Every structure is written in structure tokens, then in C-alpha cells.
Image 1 (cartoon, rainbow, N blue to C red):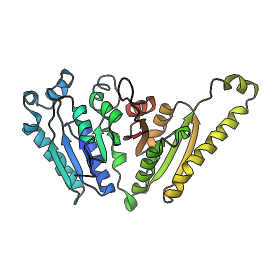
Image 2: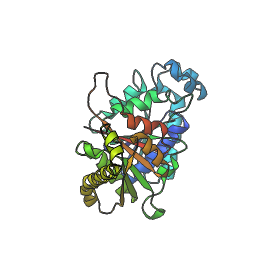
Image 3: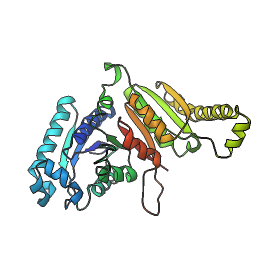
Image 4: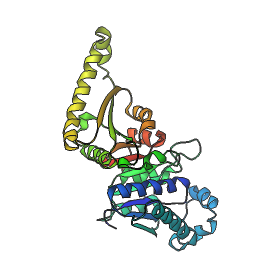
Amino acid sequence: MPGNVTVGLNGSPESFAAVRWAAQEAVLREVALRIIHIQDWPVPPGHVEHVVSSSAATAAHTEPGRSPKYEDLLARAAAEAEQAHPGLSVGAENVTGVGLASKVLLAEAETPGGMDLLVLGSQGLNRLTGFVIGTTSLPVAAASPCPVVLVRNGGADRGERPHRSEQPAGQLLLGIDPREAESEAPVLDFGFTEAARRSCGLQILHAWSFPPMYAYAQAADPGLGNELAAEIETNLERVVDPWKRRFPGVTVRTTAVAGAPGAELVYASPDADLVVVGRRERARPVGPRLGHVAHAVIHHATSPVAVVPHP
């Protein structure tokens, strides 16, 4: 299914929330929905809890593509998507592979002519399982060549709102750094395109902090902070202006605040249907990784989070 929205299903409530979100997104994009199940093979010790809780202990010794348990999960998810969105083309399949599910998902994402968007469930951060669930979602978000959306069970409903005239428009939240405007073009393109599809507003937020050299100067001249803030706001408007002209139907609000970017995006996220952040594609000696801003938003924002790769 070229040009589809693909969603990963593992039977957890978060993954079913991801299926609901992905189905709505497929409708918005007017493309097919592909639901896939990938089980780590062999099942690692860290996933024993999921295996036992889903009554699939015996499936740990069976190749996942041949498990009736997972076939039933896929059939149920596909039926729910088709019932909620009549006319939507839905495909469901077990994808077999050796190794961690994250590696198999990345291989699927790298297939030429494959998915345009990958959607996964995420528990966010809590005391017990915040980093366990990250064994799949975080590595995929850090290395996927296509945008990845992470959806929580409790926060997914806002992202599933009907679009266009069916109810009042919501809002998307996008975090950028105007100093990186050229490299972050894919992030801006994703955010504006999503807002246009949903006929909703777009808040663009940039969080900044005083350079260390300003500490003594600000003490001598308290008005210096206001001057710097005004300059940053002007620069942000300059960066966003071409995109506003390209998408005249999108209502845009730009905000520049003094603070830590990750924290400020998390603070603003409760009012957003979707939070959009960027992730650099640069190769690193230790392999791809998420930046601190994306990492903070994924773990703490209650709304769905889109991670968009950029140079």
C-alpha cells in the first residue's frame, strides 16, 4: 500500500488508541490504513509482562506470524477502523522478522514506496513502565525516515476529533527554533499541512533563554531583556511569514517565551490536539537518538506527539 498511514498494534490499550488516531489521519489524508503486528522474536525478558497479560505465553514459542492470538487482534482492530470510517481502505497483517520489534519497524519504514506516516502507542513516562515501552517507540522515533506519531490511551481522544465542519476546530502546537529555520523546513511543512487538513489553528512556539554573557548586562540595563525578546519575536515572525502566505487558510499564532523548550512545549500541550517537534537526521557516533526537546515532549505531553525528521 504505497502512500499509506501505518500503525503498529501489540494488543495494548495504547496501541488500539493509536489505531483509532491513525484511522482518522488516513481519512484526513485520503489514503489507506495499514495495521501491522510485529512481535519481538525471540521474545525478550523485558516483554514477558505483555506476553503474560495478553494470555499469549504460549505464543512466545511460536513464530508470531502464525499466532491465532495476534490474527484475532488484527481482525478486531481492522473491524473497529472500518466501522468508525466506512469506505476507508484497511489492511491488516502480521509482519515477521528476527530481532527487536523496533528494528523490524524501521526496516518497514525504509522500504521504498512504503509508509508516509508511522503511528505507535506510547505510555509516556511513569514510575514503572515509562522506559520499558520506550524499547520500541523511542528507537523508532529516533531513526525513522518518515514522521512518527506517538499516541497515548488517555490523550488520544483530542487527536481523533472530527474534522472540517463537523465540530469546532482544535489546535496544533509546533515547536521550532528560528535560528534553524532552513533545516526545520520539513517540520514547518508537516505542521502547516496537518493544520490545513484539519481546518484548525496552529500555535508555533519558540522557547529561548538569555546567553550567559547577558547576565551582567541585564543587571546593568533591565530593559535589555525586553529588547532581546522583541528581536526574537520579530525573527520568529519573519521565519513563519512565508509559510503563512503558502497556507492562507491556517490561522497561526506565534509565541516566543523565555524558558526551556521541552518544558514550555509540555506546559502548552494540554490545549493541543497534536504536538509537532523535529528530530535531526544527522549520523552520530553512537547511532541516531532523539534530542532533549523531543524526548521531554514524548515522555510528558498528554496529547499525541509527531516527531518529524529534518537535516
